[in-house]
Length: 164
Image (cartoon, rainbow, N blue to C red; front, side):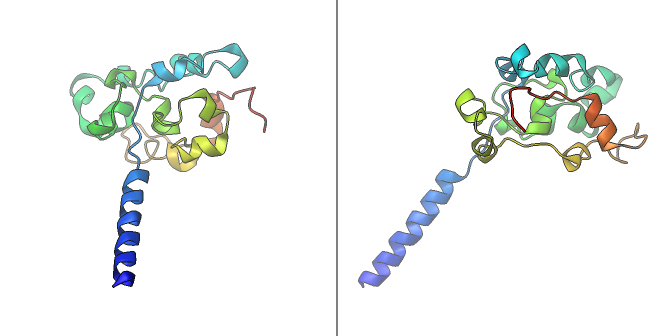
């Protein structure tokens, strides 16, 4: 009898811990990223994003395309994710930081961001070609090929404070 109770309690503990560990990270929007990522000492990533094509992706949609889910999935981070995962991001923001780096609610604090492994465990994504090709692919009506190295260089926004 004790064995059955022990097995039941262990099973229950495993279920509860998996539920507790299951995280639905929320999308917080570029304005929250800006608080830390717009300083010259860290590379002014927000400023570079705001001046680039991703921040203006919604402006390129005209007429019915501006509300077409097939277009919005790549032109707006907020329009492309489950609504229950939105904390403070807006559709008008376009392709925000979190399209490439993952929802930031759990890794946004400076204490977590100082530790890359910890930030990644909290949802930070280091984007690679696969991440970019979710949108930059043959499904796009404006696709003209995609050279990852070339386009990555165009939107590069390194943090000089991070040691490689």
